Image 1: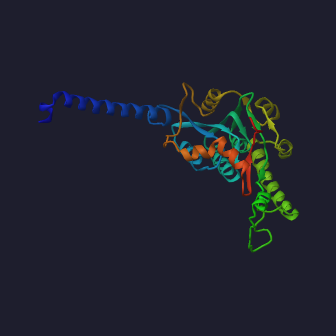
Image 2 (image 1 turned 90 degrees about the vertical axis):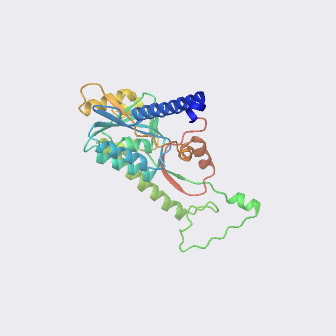
Image 3 (image 1 turned 180 degrees about the vertical axis):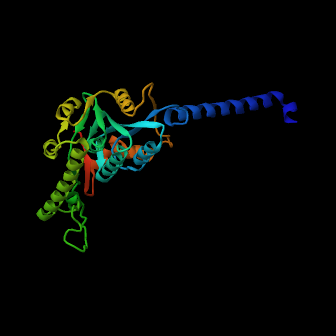
Length: 299
């Protein structure tokens, strides 16, 4: 037998397998305990992180829904560190929060920035907590693209467009925008902006006209936002967890859990990165509209 002929080698093999298995087991326990609910006992506060540019709502909605349906989770904290993003994803997350607050308490904890679409989402919760220096507000809509007309003329490229209607190529980067097109797009932006103000005022139980007066795109610090009624309290993530837990009826120690990690999505990380955003803002060839705060260069 192999074990008799090579006892030392056999021993090393057994030890290697045992060590490898032990490492896998420990890694599983640590991951489960830190991210999921399997190894956390008692009543818990579920934490959903919303970071970077909001380009997709699927995983965030799934996490909120799972926490809403888990009876061991008494409240939810949304940790928002985002300049906002797409109109559709922001509205979808807001809608899911509005369904959730009817069953469980949801508190928003703002990190370094929770502006535009980030504030839109926070407005749907039961309460908002921010740091004194958090960048928030930026309630508004931005739409734009890069015009390549002069570059095409210099290199001798002549675009040919066949369209079914006058406005089918509206926002084309290959020609100047006409006044009727500008009027249509401004009306479009105004309508989306109105939706933002309406939902934010409803979520915050604030008078529509007051919210509208603050919705001119300006940013606020957390301190200013509290004075204006855009947020409720000043504090960090730990304070938000404590607040949510007590609102959820937890009397003793508050345990917290995060969604199960499903591996690192490198493509998604790049899409959320500032490098990608800089590239898109500089070389945008198509018309986009978003609830997005765009910080000045160097910030």
